[in-house]
Amino acid sequence: MNKEQVDLLGEYIKAGTSAILIEEIPENAIKKGAVVLEADCSKAELMGHYENLEFIAPEWYKKLMDSSKEHTPVLIIKDINKIPEEEQRKFIELFKYRKVYVHKLPENCMIFATYSNLEERPIQEELYSFMVHI
Image (cartoon, rainbow, N blue to C red; front, side, top):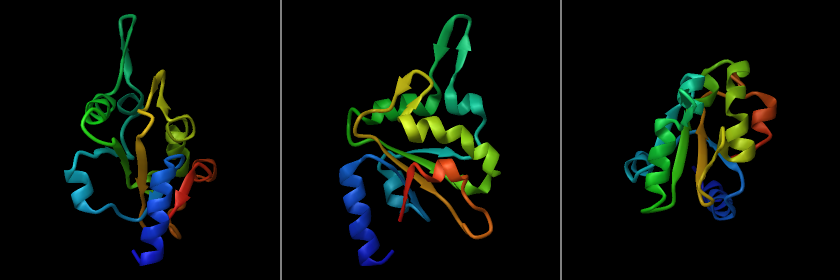
């Protein structure tokens, strides 16, 4: 990442309004408590599920909420473009409304999506419209 990209990333992080599409996340960011969700997760793993009449939030959401008590919560969707474009649509609610089913993400939550080789494996157009590409 060059200095201009780092500065731009810093500005978007401060604004905190959009998911950030970035080629890679430094390993130390993950070690500092970021919650990593693989893009190829199942819809139930992403959204949670019902047990009898009670909705159970996904495990990653619980971790994210716990991390928000100690520091700025960070959610990383890893390798978003390694899944087919149609399957990528499952992340629209998360990126557009910053929630998962009925559970809102913490206000100060930062969302990153990583990718590789966009020319060969594009990101679904509507999903891409909710991201800032660094």
